[in-house]
View 1 (tube, rainbow, N blue to C red):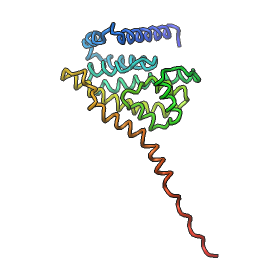
View 2 (view 1 turned 90 degrees about the vertical axis):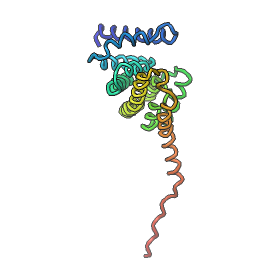
View 3 (view 1 turned 135 degrees about the vertical axis):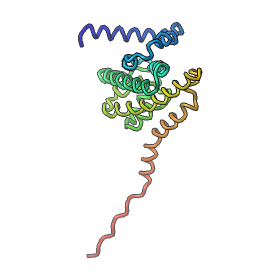
View 4 (view 1 turned 30 degrees about the vertical axis):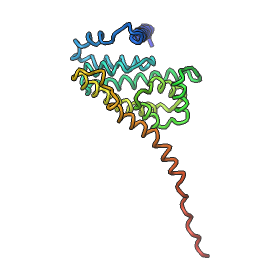
Length: 228
């Protein structure tokens, strides 16, 4: 990577990180940025720009939920959801690769360590898909855990694309509709998230239940020996 490009990427990530920290501390209101961006809502470059910002947030393991909120408020779901998914999957790949290069690190929060232990026990496609779709599960922990554990990249990307596609589309539709009703704060209420949580729970429970039923099934009877 050229040095100028690397410096530009580092500066962008630093700016995003600073903005995220200021927003979490209550010193920066994201609505101000949204108000400025509304003047460019019809610009052709807005969906690709949102995808790039989302990719940078996910690659840097920063909260990426802001991207789907801003995108859904500025764009129709048919544009906001694909932009979010493209950026989130690309950023997840970047975080996965960085974690894969730093395999062996045991650092992380308690919740990320629990998630990593779950992935160590069950890293099948269904579990990855369920974690991607479950509300409240930090995507940064999934990306870093998958990279540290060396989960196959194809499986990781496929589950990420499908799970983020379902989740991103649901969020985009809910936020876009709520914005038209002046009730953005209630866009992702429990009635909206319940189907997503139920589907994720079903995906998590289905494989062990299937294995238990298969283990309890009696072995097939051996055919009788033919008389000599």
